[in-house]
Length: 132
Image (cartoon, rainbow, N blue to C red; front, top):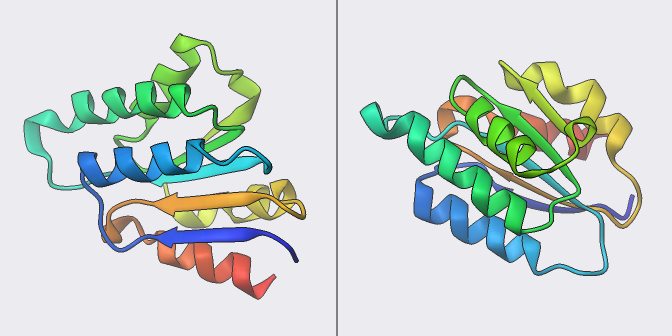
């Protein structure tokens, strides 16, 4: 349906998340939708690294942000703190909770990046998009 999907749902660490978000930020001719799941197994650094990603998301001029998981709420909180419109941010505890919203949001010519640790199951979100 004209949507470009970047499926990077297998694993995630801070550096790979940062690089992927910055790459999406370089796209100029499409509406940019970012779906981020938790980076798992970060231990005591989880909250801070997710918060730090909020700075990257904000500076990348993302149009819509969907976060999924326990720690990714820190990404959303940070981008809102920095000035992103709260109405452009959505948070869900589990991946299946975002299906309806995401399918409603997607328009022709959008580009969407999905990235998170495999345990967050963003691959299921990709499959849901592809089915529709």
